[in-house]
Amino acid sequence: MTEIVNYLPAPAQTVHYRHEWKHQINGMDRAVLLARLSAVMQRDSHAINGVYRIRSLYFDTPGDKALREKQDGVNLREKFRMRYYNGDTEYIVLEKKSKVNGLCVKDSCRLTGDEARRIADGDISWMLQSGRPLCAELYCKMKGQGLRPRTIVDYTRDPFVFEPGNVRVTIDYDIRTGDFRTDFLNPGTLTLPAGERVILLEVKWDAFLPDVIRDAVTLPGRHVTAFSKYEQCRIYG
Image (cartoon, rainbow, N blue to C red; front, side, top):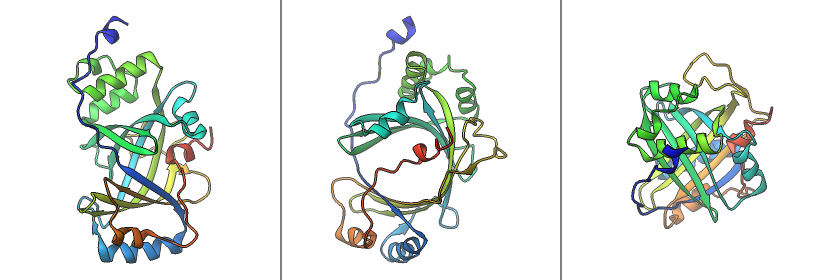
């Protein structure tokens, strides 16, 4: 406990909150959006054949704090996850996503494959002295709150970017859950469809959303939703 109390976080930096819209859409909507977005935005340069395949390992407490706060619409909440793209375990990130008054901010740092594996296995003593404030924060919350790896979340993403407004538009689909599995670095880990087939449109931006993007993502009858892929992937328990 002494080492947790003595941990001093890095000096505060300016926090840049982003706006975020989410809409549940269908396959026809996706086809329309792909045509519109391709005309006015750029595909993310890191995508392979235009898409990402994303695998994340989300954390939660024994009492499911992250899940329950999402379900209850708590105004100030956060969640931790480890993530990699397109099966590339040479580039793994630890992320903390926070939401305040409907605005989002994300902190992240790199992890090696060995570090990610050790965290997933509960070997965390090295994290406090890692030199990365986010690793140290996760360590403190794993020790103090019982935060632990909870479930794998897999999905495929169509990513688009637009420089003015730092806009990012993504379409996520084929959402799958590892249920209680935490061996997310194992490519053979079985995941299952997370309930009903869902396609999710997400629009994120900084200070302003350009009209050309607002028009492109507007679909009749689609409204902002509070959908969470982590919550969806907890459908089986």
